[in-house]
Image 1: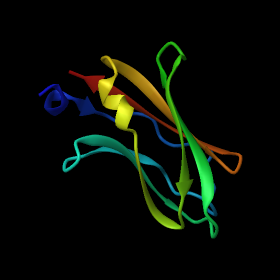
Image 2: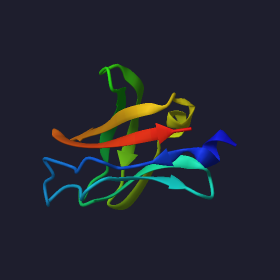
Image 3: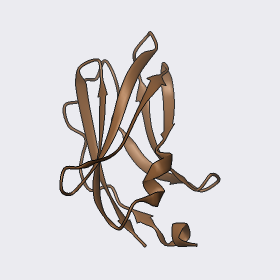
Amino acid sequence: MKFLLTIIAIILVVFNVSAKSVEDIKLGTNITTKKVEVRFTSKFKKNTAATFTVTNADGVIVSMQTSQLVFGANSICMCDTMELAEGTYIVTMVSKNKIRTTQFIIWK
């Protein structure tokens, strides 16, 4: 039930984005699976690994995962983020030496 009361708000814009690699990342809730997902379009011709790190407002890493990106649409589940306490969190995506970030807030 707490999940239904959780609201995620994106409040930072993505920076340091190369038009040749990955478009802006977006964070949202998948209503079907009830999980938080990072969505973006990759323009890398070959599959590329990306590391996703979630840090809290104090700068402590609370979640980290590596995923393989594919050319085109990508949707990466940030499954362990729904167990986090209320607060502000930053998602950082690193791939091919490019860094993209967005921020979200959890209210319960």
